[in-house]
Image (tube, rainbow, N blue to C red; front, side, top):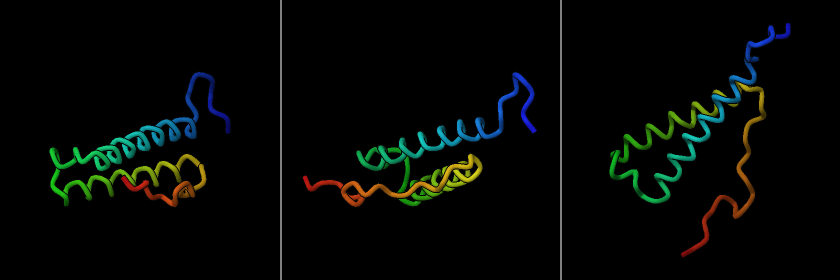
Length: 82
């Protein structure tokens, strides 16, 4: 049944929440990459937070009806050597 006019559809809402969860994951990825996470978390706390964020992304991706994200083949997920 279509949503009444002026009421957001549930798939639109779930995609917005997915976008927010993915931005949060990008933030934690950047914290890890630059090493700033050590200022705010112990290693155990940081791992627990990242796992929570990853679970949220997976849950919102499932609710939004989008297919699961596959890792990119670019550099096989590895960073270039310094």
